[in-house]
Length: 251
Image (cartoon, rainbow, N blue to C red; front, side):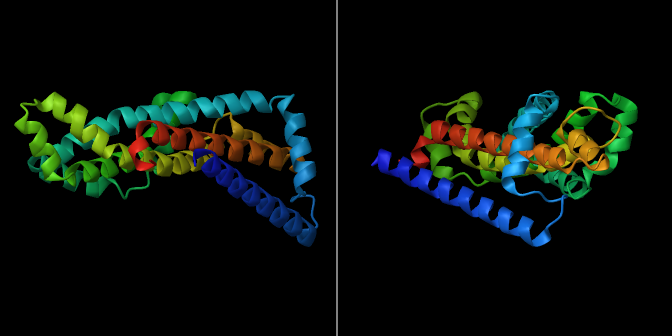
């Protein structure tokens, strides 16, 4: 049964890849412009660029995304669990979250560049700040909506507050937390591209925009492919964490 499920997943991914390549190829034929090359020349440029400086830019971008996600999760998950477990305190904190959540955090990019410099720190902090709210709100809501029976049953066994977090709140909220990480990954990738187009000379975003300004459209698409693959493999990593830590969801 497990083998057939893996086989079906492989077929689904294969069909999706074929559909994307065919759509890309047809669109390239219709546009007929060097700015939108067909798949084969684009991937040829991608593999050729990996032998140059693309791999260095890819490593830097990967570090920035991973560091920002880890920082955001480290701060947001405990805060979300705590607020969900303590609704009275959440009544006072919730207005602050609702007032600051809708503010587009990217407007603080110039401020962070001034305060933290043009290196990795300002970029990581900005991405983490944006993803933080997504993880915080999702975790808090999941924690607040846990079934009371689970909590009371553990309390009846004499569990303390730490054990409640360890055996009830964290496992019960983990699927929602991983879902928020998936959503946060998409946001992080978009903000990463934005941050790497200002006051920097490293990262995939810089590589793409520099290639575009140089009219090197083949290298530009090599950077686009690199960023797409990086996001895809990070998404697969989060998906694997869900299958491992939340095995009861996929019996």
